[in-house]
Length: 129
Ligand code: HEC
Image (cartoon, rainbow, N blue to C red; front, side, top):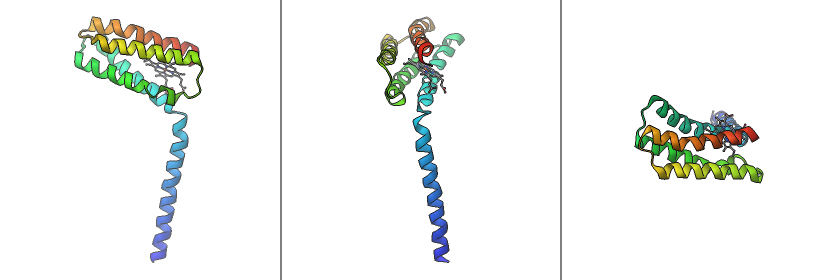
């Protein structure tokens, strides 16, 4: 009885271990998607706010902060990229930092700081996506 239980336990642990290993293997590639999807979520929320003409200063700051924080993972998500790619990453960081510093209080201000951010997303996608 006891040994049967141990065998079952061993099997379960084995399966869990395999699932973890497979996830770890998977994670490497699609992490780039995860980082991009997260950035798109926050940039999307900001554009939606502009479109709806409902721009809450605090919420804008939160989304911009998350947009900036997510960019810290770009080098991990895209290892071994060339210098022009890194330049695009730097430009995106600069535009996002500028947007945060501007602390957009209304939709006009938010739209103004989002424009250069959106242009940088687009510029990099045209070259690398
Ligand atoms: C430095 C270059 C670069 C910048 C800047 C950049 N992207 Fe991307 N993006 C890429 C690349 C490369 C891919 C394709 C990734 C892949 O297939 O693994 C991509 C893919 C995406 C995708 C598709 C994700 C998926 O699941 O396939 C979305 C959404 C996206 N980017 C949103 C954004 C947004 C929003 C911004 C600006 C805030 C942005 N990106 C800025 C390089 C960039």
